[in-house]
Image (cartoon, rainbow, N blue to C red):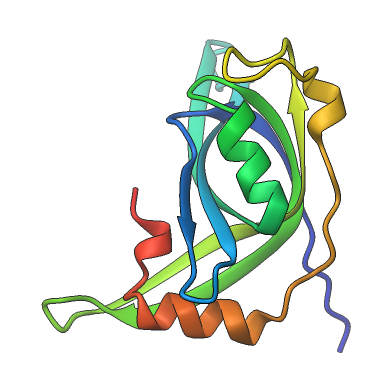
Length: 147
C-alpha cells in the first residue's frame, strides 16, 4: 500500500507564535494559521471560507518564528500531518490533527520584531525523532497545542 503525507500551506498567522521548551531544552512553537479559499456558489455569488490550522515548529526554526513572526505575518509552510492524543485534566480523551512543519518560509515585508529580511530567515531543519516529541507532548497533557 502506498502512503504519502505532505502538506503545503500559505496563509497568515492569527496570533503571535507561542514558544515553549521541552524538559530537554528543545524549542517548540505553535503557529495558528488562517488559510482562505474564495469560490463562487451555484448562484455565482463570491464566497469566502477560512480554515484555521495549528502548525508545530521545532528547534532553531521555532525560535526564528518566535523572533521574526507576529500576528498577521504571511508564511508558506511545508510539512506533514500528525495526530496525537492525550487525556485532559478532566479525564477526557482529546485528539488533534496538526501540521508539523519541516520548513517555514517568511513572506512579505520584514517583521517589526527584527531587522532580518523575511526571505533570508527561512531555514530547513532535519526531522526530529518523533518519539521525543510525542513523549513530551503526552507528558505535558498536550500543552504544546493550546490555542
